Length: 150
Image (tube, rainbow, N blue to C red; front, side, top):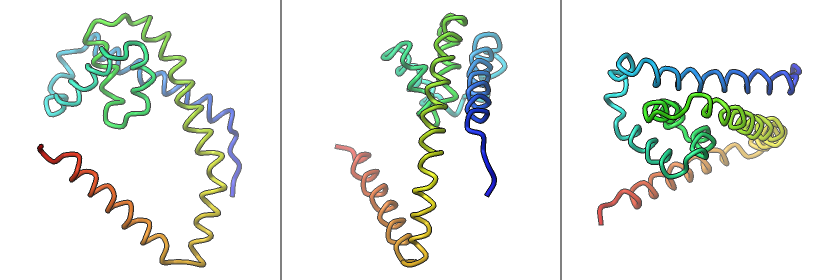
């Protein structure tokens, strides 16, 4: 296997995570009318991201990094709510650093464990199927249970 320079990878990921969120904020702030047609189908997600922003304030910038599906919409909804561009940029620096360091370091150091796990699957090839069906079953059961009307 090849080598990966962890520090260069962290730096690149932090910079481009920051640039991506700043670009989304810029689009929401200065090009509202241009992006509105693309979000017609996502009104529920936009409402949820607005609620997250109102409830958690600055912490929404940190929280949104970890929420798949909302990650793109929070910077846009913050911009639409007239949040200050400089303030967003300032907090976004720290949120980007935190997000990248957490995700990348956990992934990097869990790599050896995951490789060992897949090596053990060679000895017991039936285990991945049991695990997969258990996870799918648990997700299906919880979705049925949580979305049931009361």
